[in-house]
Image (cartoon, rainbow, N blue to C red; front, side, top):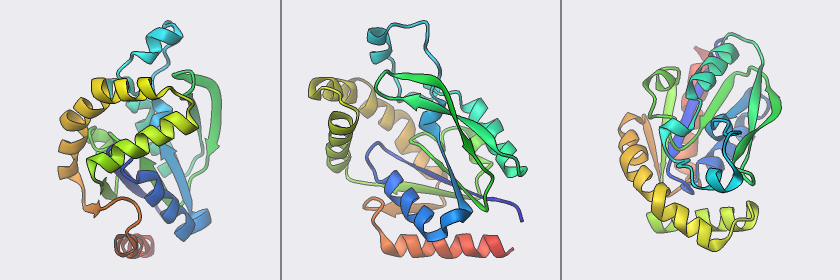
Length: 204
């Protein structure tokens, strides 16, 4: 049985991870997850202060080619060593985690629909759409509380790169979605529809 690859895109704080976790719970051990964020480029040549100023919301910040090869490896039935990114130091680490092949592979990230080659690996493309104010609030809470960043730095980054890159790359990529989930990840009707489609593909 070939793997079903599900792409989940949407703006920062839109509810992508919520939906991903719901699908993981629904299909349990049948699911492996690959996060685009783990494929940020290594920036060892830059100082911490320089890395803080990098535009992490641009497609050019990612080693997407490596992610594509890893997904092809998973689809062929082989495990991968997925890189690990550390948001507290703004850099990819030396560590990796083993991701095993599975019936369902979820690919999550704000820009996973932006790359044509990556898109074409996906059987289902889902865009999670949420109110911009709600997304901003979630972003602030996540970066301030979980990633220990200052409120000023979070707001500065949002104005400088997050918002303009969302308008330039993320929002336009919505046109590639097969399903648009409105109102964030907590949408039980959408979850049922997606689950039914996944089950159908797994039977085929």
